[in-house]
Structures are given as structure tokens and as C-alpha cells.
Length: 230
Ligand SMILES: *Cc1c(COP(=O)(O)O)cnc(C)c1O
Image 1: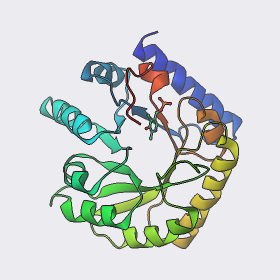
Image 2: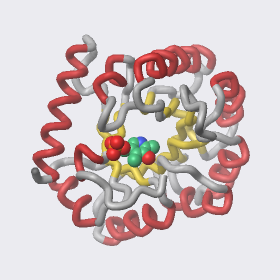
Image 3: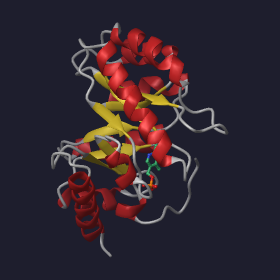
Image 4: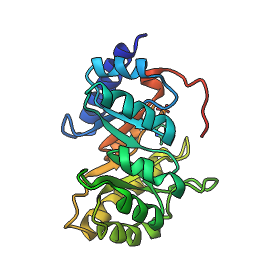
């Protein structure tokens, strides 16, 4: 199947899951995860109408961003991978969103390094939910303190939360994330918190049933990846 056929199928699945959850059609955004895929694949997705893309690796993502910028194509780029402090500057200079913020130091650097004249970076806090074996993401009880800190940084806009639950633990983890998202909105009413990023190729319907506002889909759009550094 072609990328455009895959996108049509995924959009249909998102619409169906949204309706089944008694939610408003259009309330779940599709982020196309293009990591490891060439610009030609992204071009096909653009032709099919997609504008928001997720990348995990800084250099790879930045070179794709520059490729499309030089051709005058306006896209929205989300950084969704692990971020070390020596890579924050490149991310701050090129990406529109960072979904994987898990440390105050990283948030501070992103804010300091955002070039003047660019819009603030939209930020999600990555939460370590049901991931005993993984060090990615902050613990549930550290979310609010980190959120309060991010809310004070001038060049960041806190938009919400992101999580990657362990396969098979989706339902419970997604329910916990939904509760945490509601707590965060209540705790920081002055922030524009509107994004709960959860759900990937294998669990997007479950995530939508638990309030996801953005699914991050790679494999179901672009096919299997040749390599996966994660
Ligand atoms: C790779 C990746 C995805 C996409 O996963 P698929 O299972 O291919 O849909 C989503 N989110 C993050 C953070 C990823 O690293």
C-alpha cells in the first residue's frame, strides 16, 4: 500500500476511535513520525495533506527541516526523542515542539537558546508511566513541579504531556495519563494546556478512548523501519 493509502486508512481509524469514544470528530491530531524515513516519503505524506511530523534524532530531523524550509514548504516539526543537553541548541533553533522534556535543565536551555523572533517552543513533559525498565520520562509525582518551572520560562509554552507506555500496559497507563492531564490543567489554569500525546501504531484506539489529543504514528503510515536506534 502507498503512503497516501496508509494515511487515509489511519485517518479513518482515528475517526472511528474518536466516534466510539463519544468524542468530537477532529479532536485527535495525527503526528506522522518520519524518523529514519527519507524526504521522499515525507513529500508523499505532504501531498496527502499532512503537515505535522515527528523526529527522534536531532541531526536527521534538522536536515529534513532545512530541506523543506529551503523549498518554502511550511510544516510543523515535533522533536519526540531523547534529548541530551549538548543537542538542545539545534533543537531550539529548528523545531516547533519538543514532546520529550524530562529535566528542568533541558527546559531552561531550550528557552535560553530559542532564537529571538521565533515563536516560543511548544513543550510537553514526557511522563514515565508503566515503564519500570526505562529511564525515559519523569515520575508522576515530579510532573507538577517541572510544569510549574516550565511555566516560568519565557520562550517555552507548556502544552501538556506525552507518554510511551510499555506494550500491553496501555489501558491502565492511558487512564493514569488522562487523570494526570486533568490534574495539570486544574493546577495551571493560566497555561494553554491542551495536548495529551499518546498512542502509536499498535495502541492508538486505546489511547483515543482515554482522551489522547494527538497520536504519533510511524509504522502504519511509512511502513516498518529499516533500523531503530531506540
Ligand atoms: C517511533 C516512535 C513513534 C511511532 O511508533 P510506531 O509504532 O511506528 O507508530 C511514536 N512515538 C515515539 C516517541 C517514537 O519514538
